Length: 302
Image (cartoon, rainbow, N blue to C red; front, side):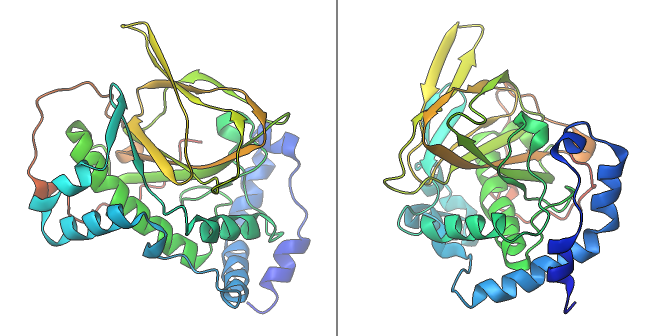
C-alpha cells in the first residue's frame, strides 16, 4: 500500500464527457481500480489525522445528539427527538442537524478530500454537478476513507433511519438500503435543478455552509400539485430537511456564492421505495430504534 496514494494521483482518468455518456470504459476504470483507490484513501486519511481532521459524534447538534443517544438507550423517550423537527411544509420537516460551531471540521475534511487528487466520482447523475462526491460504498468512485465511512454509517444507521421511521412510519420495510452524495451549487456554474421526485423512500438534505458563508438564491422549492402550493425553503448552517422521496421539489437558481449539501437516501431492496401518503400506520418505538441487519444489495440509483 506504500505507493497507492501516488499511483492513484498519477492514474489517467476518464473525461467528464465520458462520465456523462456513461461509457463502458468509465465503469471499467472504477471497477478495475477500486482496490487501489480504497488503499489510497486509507493512506490519505492517515496523513490527514495528523492535522486533527477526525469526524465523530461531536459534529451533531448537541440537542439532537443527546435526544438520539437517549432514544437508543430507551426508545420510549423518542418524543425528545421528534420535538426537534418542525413541519415546514406538508410532509417536510426541518431541524438543526449539525452543530454550526463544529461544522468547519466536516467542511474542512470534505474540502481536503476534494483536493486529495484521488479520483472521486462527482454526482453527475443528479444534475451534471461538477463538485461533490459519491459517499456510499455501493457507488463507483466513492469516498472510501475509513474514518469517513464510519461517520457516514453512523449518520445513516443511528440517526437517519430511526428518525425517518419516527416521522414516516410507512417506510418501514423500504429503508434497509442507504445511498448518499455531497453536492455543491455555485453561482454561474451548476445553478438549479428542475422539479423532480427522488428514487428514495426518504431524503435527508443537510446544509453544510458555515456561519457567515452566505449565498443568494438556491432555495429548495417544495410543490404540492393538488393544493397548487409552492413553498421556497432556505437552509441555515447545519440544518436539515427531511421528506418522502415522492415529494416534488426543485433547487432554485443560485445567484451568488455557493451552497454545499449532503443528500442522503433510504430505500428498500433493489431500489424499492415507499411512495408516501399512507396514513394510519403505527409501529412501536422499539421497532424504530433498532439496528438494521440487512446487508447492502449493491444497487445504486445512479
